[in-house]
Image 1 (cartoon, helix red, strand yellow):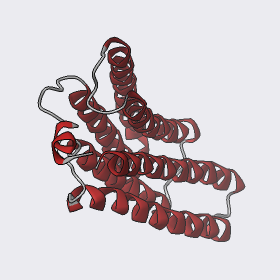
Image 2 (cartoon, one colour):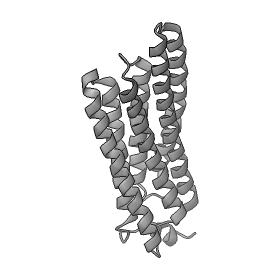
Image 3 (cartoon, helix red, strand yellow):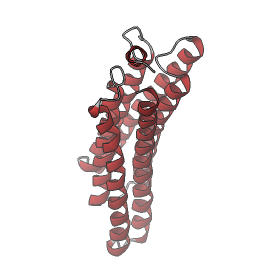
Image 4 (cartoon, one colour):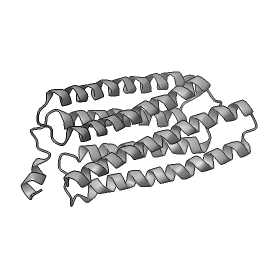
Length: 216
């Protein structure tokens, strides 16, 4: 691919897909911020409202993803391959979905308090979504020499490795210190859902890396 083709992969003429992907990434970041608030800052009586707000973002993400699918079916020329647009949108939507599932488990189980490792996982998830958002915003202008874009997906991978360590410590501490069996079961399922969320963030990072390698 010559220089002109590289520079024409993403052009200002795209008024559909890149803006929609930005909107989807913004929705994901809002959901992850609410998830962090849910674990780090809210009292038990505030949890239903935060979970409701996360569900609102999840519904918004579904609508944006549906619009992307519709536009893919109706548009002949896309800024990059339709399967790549579809894959990226799907993975971002999956992150939002699993954030919502984690929040729903909090609402369902209503544990007394969250262990520090659960809170740390939500912070890692939030940072990971911010990295995805930064990469999505950079899709319009990235090229092979774009160190910033590469930094985003490398940081996403580093965060996933960090999440693995926090998850393992969290489970070990839970079984070591939690004496209430029912509470242990509740917290174990919630922490496992957070670990799944971190994995979904990393999977999205892999899609971004694939796009970079393919088009840069």
